[in-house]
Length: 100
Image 1 (cartoon, one colour):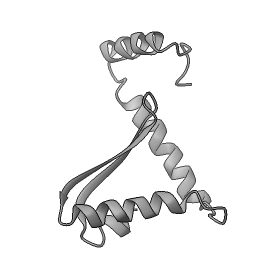
Image 2 (cartoon, one colour):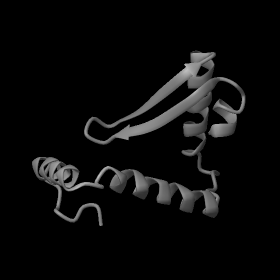
Image 3 (cartoon, rainbow, N blue to C red):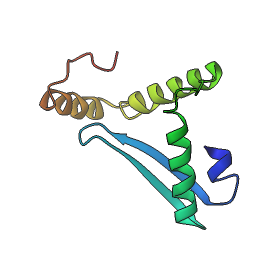
Image 4 (cartoon, rainbow, N blue to C red):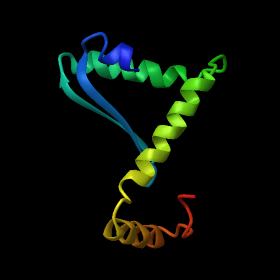
């Protein structure tokens, strides 16, 4: 994704986030030179992963897993943040150990 969006000069930075509570994938572009082209490139990239003949590179898949784990636990570096996360999880009906 980096090569096709930032590497081709369509956007200085991007972020692709999932919002499970509303069932959406959100694309955020930062300093995009061509927002419509950057969006189209991201849409193509995401669409390619759902094709039957798509093969995940094992190294890239492990890197993605590590990144996701880091994103989930990075914000829990203080006790107040962990408490807020626990209360939020309880309100959503999640198990106490949902991050394990």
